[in-house]
Length: 269
Image (cartoon, rainbow, N blue to C red):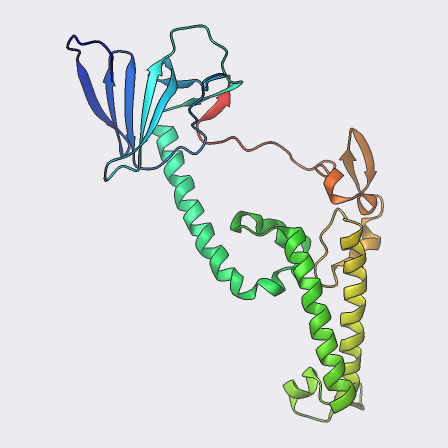
């Protein structure tokens, strides 16, 4: 690692599952997994603190099994400009990296499983759809897909109920009438009601979708819109009604807890 021909002492030890070798002003890290945010830079280098000394990433190489990658760190000896943030390399950073890797693999597996019901994910209400982001789903995208799905289901239901008088509800209960409040209601009437409900949901959610509403409405979630009157979000330093905002301008809701999640091992320089 050193350009000096004179012999120098090498020290190797483990940091978690990683193998670390130090020699002169260099540190070689054979890492089991990548640190995604570590970058080789020619300027505005990113400081990496290891054993209370300041280094920068000199080189990144493919690792030899069982290691995934090799990092060569060089001691920071000049006064060149650094990035406005830095990283620590220690047991805690390695443990956090490995935990993030396990979480990402789990989220990826769940995301693949949810793709089986992808057209229907947008029917979930906004709060639930926001929780799907970590599985790789964009709330606005799945909302648009769900609107198309509801329109397709509504059209199919209208054709079956209108022309064949055998809609989805009729197929499910296999009866021509159902008693409701002492009256025998034709099942086909319930199919007509379902068509109207699906049509209404399509109109309301598609209107909000085109206006880029701050809320990506789920199935019939728009019925609670009157209850949102008076609630505000902060937009450009000003408070605006929640139901009047469009998504690109929306910040955190008023009085909601906020804060940026810090990357593993990252801190302000």
